[in-house]
Length: 182
Image (tube, rainbow, N blue to C red; front, side):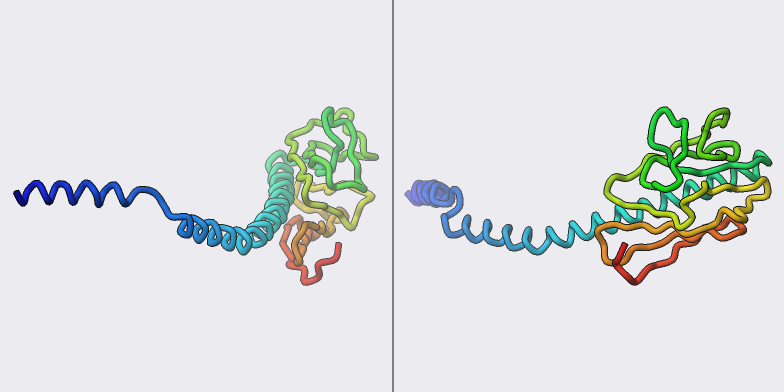
């Protein structure tokens, strides 16, 4: 008779352990709410920092690509901002648009007769300004940007906004900014 008692006991104990109690469910929901409350602002700061870092990399990529192309092709290469397809003009005072790398000098903002080599799409969450907003960035056949150097300021939703400094030799470096003002 013992085997019958054991099987009946197992059935009743299995049927009693199905699901969660209301208290366990409320505790789990409360813990989830606390974790989301703590984690969401950190995630927003993380994404804002990544947006700024991506913009810095876009600027450095455009400048390095233009410089390398100028040296490789032994010609003048210009980088400017353009307001979108079709890329017929450069806007020197608004660097928040798509960036265009062109073969030629891009004089007076006209891209007529210039060969567009590459277009780098702009970010809509980060603001970019150039301290020399009356000209494009131009690299000579030797890779120099003499007279077309300057500083790009990147402004996002973070407290420290970096700058990309382009020197006369055509090299770009990142300078961390301590102020959060743009």
